[in-house]
Image (cartoon, rainbow, N blue to C red):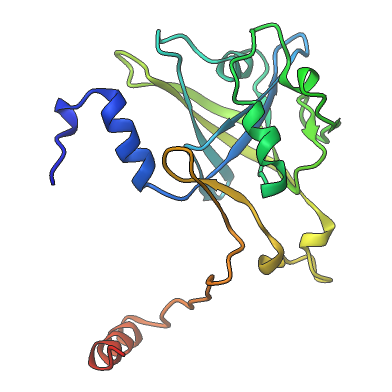
Length: 221
């Protein structure tokens, strides 16, 4: 079935997009305004853009009336942030911060979330998150320009805080120990540590890729 996006209302289009572009990592974004009032909110339209310079992208949806969310307003007043990754153990707390708290209420304070000072930015870090990125704002762009539905954030990573337990003795990631939460569609979530995860090396060359695929096609079982 073909869905013509131009003919569909947002309430029908969104579930199809968010339910098929999966899994999506969760950016648990800590920000503050110019007076230090904090905000913590999760966003799943989130990805790594490039490693030179290390840059993250987060799409911060606007409210139905087109007004900006607290995170976007804070980033304009204090262009610094911390992006946390979320483990399954933090799912309930992360989900609680998605509630519509009043503008003058800090999710961190209301939910008694334990934080620690950041090294290079003003917003605090969630102490229980095993991976966090301290960042500065590169750009915060309303999109689309004529009638924004979101603000697209590009954030340069200044430093990465990774729990020691996730690193080997050479300070390399222990991928089999990293278990992070991701969004699926609807109310569904997944996590990265699964028994059927597998490794797959990139082909050494185009010729090697053709050869391996030809062998796979001739031996489908």
